[in-house]
Image: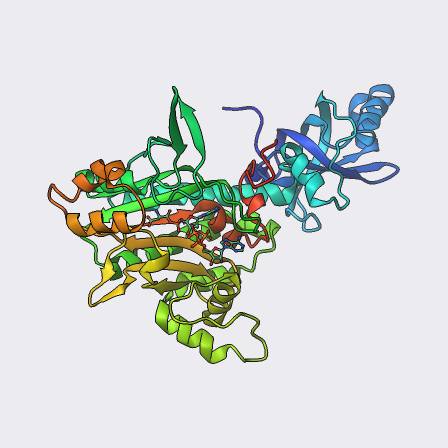
Length: 447
Ligand code: ATP
Ligand code: AMO
C-alpha cells in the first residue's frame, strides 16, 4: 500500500496518524498556533500546528526549529505532513490534521498568483500556475467526471469507440474555419469533426463514438468559442430522428447525474446551484421546432424584458435569441428542423418540407447556449452528390464518403457535443477558457 494518502481520502482515516504530500495554498495564525491550507489536487484541507506539541515531541531546540519552519512556509512550497485526522466542523472540509511533523520537499519563492484579485490576461499568461487554484481544480474535476461518464454511457449503450483521424487530405464540413498544415509537401487539414469518418464506422459497427480534440480556425472572440476543443461525436444506424433525440437526452442526463453523484465536492467549491442540475436530470427536455421558436420570439419581441433583434422565418439565431429561448423553458431545449440554408450539406430534409432539415441543436438553460448539434444524415447517393455540388464543394473530395451510400445505405443519425461547453454549463462558470487546461483562442496559444 502507498504510504502517503490523498486529501480526498482523509475522512476514511479519522483518529489515525497519516502522511500527506501536498502544497501550501495559504497560511494563517499567530503566536503558538499556525494553520496551513494544503492542497494536493484531490481537495483542499487544513492542518493545524501547536507550538507546545512540537516542543513536547521534539524537545525545545528541534521543536522550535520545526515550528519556525511552519511559520515561515511560503505559498506553493511542497511538503510532506504527518498528523492525526480529526473531525472539525469549523473547517470547510469538515476535517483537520493535527500536525505532528513536517518535511519541506520543494521551496517556492514569490508565487505570482496570490489570494488577491488578478486580471484575466495575467491569469491566462500564468495558466500553468493558475491551474492550482481551488476553482480551476474544481472545474477540471468536473471535466474529468464528464469524460469518464461519456465512456460509461456509450459502453452501456452498445457503442464502439472508433477513433477518427486528426489529419485529413480534404475539408470535412466546410472550408471557412480550417487549419491547414504541410503534409510532406501537400496540404492537409486538422479535423473539425470526426463525423464523416464515424459514418463509415457506423456502417461497419452499427453504433460508434469518438472523443478527441478538433480544431476550428474561428475568428470569434466569444465566451463560447475555442480554436481547439474536445468533441464527443456519436453516429448510429437505424435510429429515427425522435429516437436520436431520446438518446441525446439520455446522454446529457447521464452526464449531469454522474457529476452530481461523483463530483459533489467540486460543485460545492464552484457554488453551483445543484437544485437546477437535479431539475435537468429529472424533467424532460423541451423539443421545439425552429419555426415555432421563431413564432415565439416574434410574439415576445416587444416584451419589456427582451432585448433581441426581430427575426424572420429563415433567419439564423444569434446568441441573444438562444439565451432567451433556453431561459424561457428553464430546461435544456432542442431546437429542431432548421432551414437547410445555414446547416451542413449532409443533413436529410424534413419529409414534405425540403427547406428544413432533420436536425437539432440542444440549447442549455441559464444562458449557456448551444452544447450539442446533431442530425439525421442524407442516405441517397444522388441527392447527397447534388447537395455537395450545391454547397460549392467538389464531389471528388467526398468519393469515399459517397461510397457509404452505394453499398447498403441505411438511415442513420449522429450528434456532437463540445466537452468544454458542457463543462462550462455543468460547472456554472462564465467563460469557456477555464474549461480546458490550456485554452487555444484567437489571440492565445501560450502557455
Ligand atoms: P457555434 O454554433 O457555437 O459556433 P456551430 O459550429 O454550430 O457552433 P454556428 O451555428 O455558426 O456554429 O453558430 C451558432 C451560434 O454560435 C450562434 O447562434 C451564436 O450564438 C454563436 N456565435 C457564433 N459566432 C459568434 C460570434 N462571433 N459572436 C457571438 N456569438 C457567436
Ligand atoms: P457542430 O459544428 O454544431 O456540429 O459542433 C458540435 C458541438 O461542438 C461544440 N463547438 C464548440 N466548442 C467550443 N469552441 C468552438 N469553437 C465550438 N464549435 C462547436 C458545440 C457544438 O454543439 N459534425 C457535427 C456534429 C454531428 O452532427 O454529429 C458538428 O461538428 O458544443
